[in-house]
Image 1 (cartoon, rainbow over the protein chains, first blue to last red):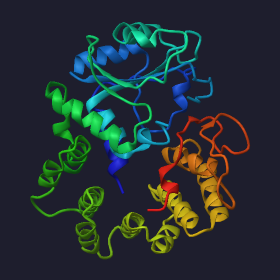
Image 2: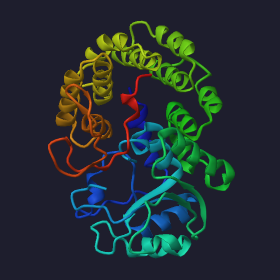
Image 3: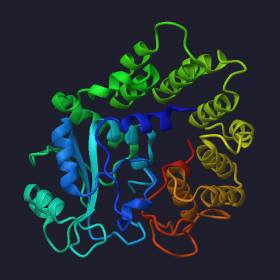
Length: 68
Length: 283
């Protein structure tokens, strides 16, 4: 069965990927969402690719081990 | 909530990755996920998020210039998240154009993106000409299932006779799930191969089938094995949620909604999951 994996792979083509810093808690995330970190890179990617930003602000709840 | 719910939905993930630039950060200045530029950008548009204590922020859909064009609640279901994302693209088609490099993708990959965007007619049309592969037929069956056309889904799956056996069995089990026929789910889910791409999903629903047939203990064992085998995984988030809200005898007396550490949480670093895992309710 290929849909998810293939689409996640192909969607990586949509905008340039940004690597996640080693000390950022979002590195633990396994949803498959290609988070763009940090913000200025995300904003630039949105401007360059003609996309909207989908921003999830967390209200003071993130832990170093990826809980949010 | 978001990770155990909408942010683990294949369609939401696919839509975010193909038509948006997703970013996550913490408003707390000392947080390990703090991002000063993001905070300034967001608070400039949403003043109410600038305080020391704020209500749980929604997902904000914003232009790179700083205009908020949509908001989706942190407590949205998968369907609400999906329809919210699709609506903002429909209202602002200038941000919904296919990427130039999408033309290089296979027709199945392009059909997947059309499906995520909500354009199932285009998705089906892409797969209409010529001979369809078994993977394409399987995908069309998934579209039919998700749009509530179980008869069409079953017809497509039956046409695959002998091909994609495990995937067809899983899809049939998911159709039984929609019918609330938990007994019919058991055999196809139990036979799903250990190295299959959707093993975690199959195990999640196997646990649900066990739970709804009254064997909560077996269900929790299944979810526990799922998390142990997969670690952080989108189905682990969902299984962690189910596990945290049940006991070996059925529903937990106190449903756990938030998990950082503790005996009830399998992952231990999940966060807020939500008031109630909707799959624990009988269909």
